[in-house]
Length: 294
Image 1 (cartoon, rainbow, N blue to C red):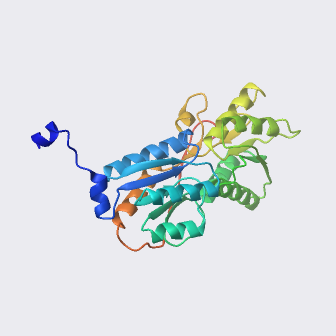
Image 2: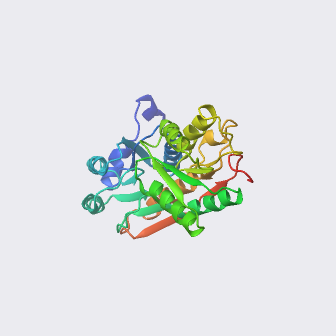
Image 3: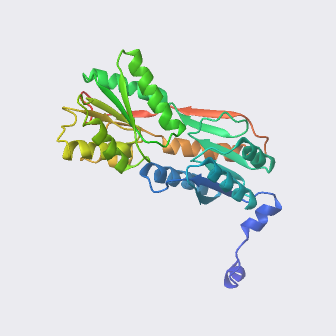
């Protein structure tokens, strides 16, 4: 060992793995890496992969399905053992190509019912229903949903779940969508909703980033008191949600549980035939002061 160190020799684990038809590489296919939620999920995933002796290869994509297809082809060329898809939805033909090449797939917050990959989702619609209940208990009657135009499965599930739950309670919902899922879109959504003749008295924002922009515009541009005049809830429980300037009621995405489930499945199922598997988590409601009565 001392002689090897003196010569600067290190074991080539990649070459050794390829001899066993295992590279040890797991691709993370992701867009919008700088957003707080996505960055936190990447941190949790890479830590779990390292703990399992795997090497994470990060591929930055846009949200388009075509971009994800290209990323998966790149993963195949690098002989990756698996890919974890955090953004977009691959075409079924690409999924089957990956499986035929021995690559395992994990789809996070995707709604496609494909055979082979592990699908991990949140019960977004059920969570949205809990927000409606919270708003009603706070005495709110004019509900609104603030969303981006990204149209991802999770965002749309929250929107549809919120509207359906409110309708079941006999309350209409005003839905407003704008731009990408970021802080600035939240500000624009506030400008649209708070300039109406009859303002909403409760707004569920599809993500915390939207909620932060919404709350800042509501307070500083429209002088709206939160939660006295307006209740606001978000989703993700990013770090900023707990800051005193927001103190945002939100839902916590169980990123550590998601990462553990994904990596454990990849490790435990390694070398076996792909199975149809789906996991659904129930996000925890984190009560803070942006909703009355919390």
